[in-house]
Length: 571
Image 1: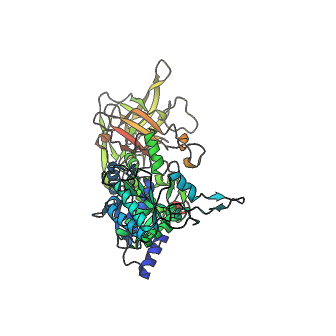
Image 2 (image 1 turned 90 degrees about the horizontal axis):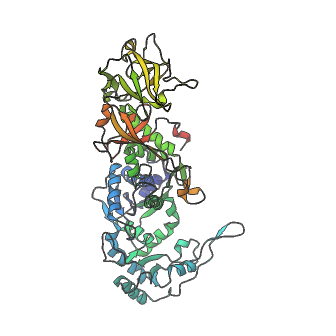
Image 3 (image 1 turned 180 degrees about the vertical axis):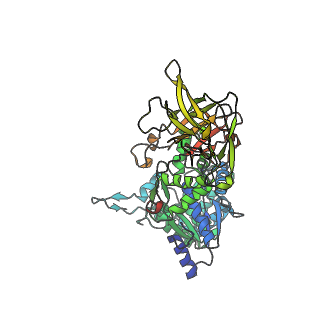
């Protein structure tokens, strides 16, 4: 979504409303239910809510639609607020709770009863479903919705309904014994309009109101009326609520309240993951992940722990734009946006994940030389750092081959490579243990080829040229750490569309733990909460909150390879 407010259909609707005089201002809201942690799909929703308010000089509320006490908790409220603030949004003093409107909603229900448009029903949930009817496909596979049947209690008098509703509130009936239903049309082609439930009896402790209430409003009832109470002009919501819009408008009309307008947009679907709090909760409860903030989860907390930045997520959400039709975005584009951001800001550090000892035989024992390394070639102001160089180094095991394949330009017997920021070395041999495993590589260095010398710099190597450059870490000065290499949580692109349970498609290789890796001394300066750093040639890594002074832990954020081309024809 560009900064041009004419770039999407929502802003066009809003402009029409302002020009026509339907509204004289713009007021939006982000209304999460506190029954789980926010995921990246919610990022799109509150990005649109806050962005539209900003574009038109309006305001955006944060309102918790907390009318389902069985599944809601204060911990979810705090997690949601923390994540939205981390994403860079502030609702200032506009924090509201639907539970604060319970008395107001109750009075509006009485108003609708008095108009003869709501009644207390005694049908059970199962009976209610049977009376409502279900959509069926005919012989031509065209969906039909046969008329439903009126409840036997639909024609109770207004006085009886008022009395029964008051007794429902007073706790005189057991859970599930009665409901308050809107009296609309049991023959309506939209099943949602067939006398939907407004209130149900539930003796559940509410995290804010305690045990004050034993009846709770249904989402479809409270949501439009909460919007109206706050003077919300544009209730922006995802596409699955389009079928609910007639009911949204019906409740506003019958309650005779502020005429908020509902506008739907396509929800965000992302490959290689699931985008529903219900399914994410299942992953947590069944311990298929370590928690809501597991770095493999699409939750904001999981992305933050993995090393994503708010800027990268906002860039992703803004560029996929606002559409009316649902589609699935390739997760590779999210990773592209992250690399674009981290490439500009991330410090470079050398680290070795699968260490192999490298011994420079013609280097003096105990000698330490400091090499000058660039912190970020994309940002000159990031400066440079000193990296200790010693006789024994760690290199990646993959950077040496006893019998190299064709076009292998790294270390093998007799071959020369450049050590990043240091010297050109030539392999002279290697050591093996009794099992035939290579335990060390031996080499000599050429003192005339130090990086930065006129004749020895990578840019102007003089007469001595090599095809390969590898990174390294001083074995004497290395920082030991644990590396956690994360891959996609699911092994297929669309796990929710596959046969069977979606958890059947969990990637068994989504996490690899390397207990002992090594990094240069600068690694010790990186703390939990810092932006991810780039381990040169390996990828971006972020310091995990589980890090301690004795055992740093780094999570792989994303690799360096990016096969994504510019998004003009991709999104």
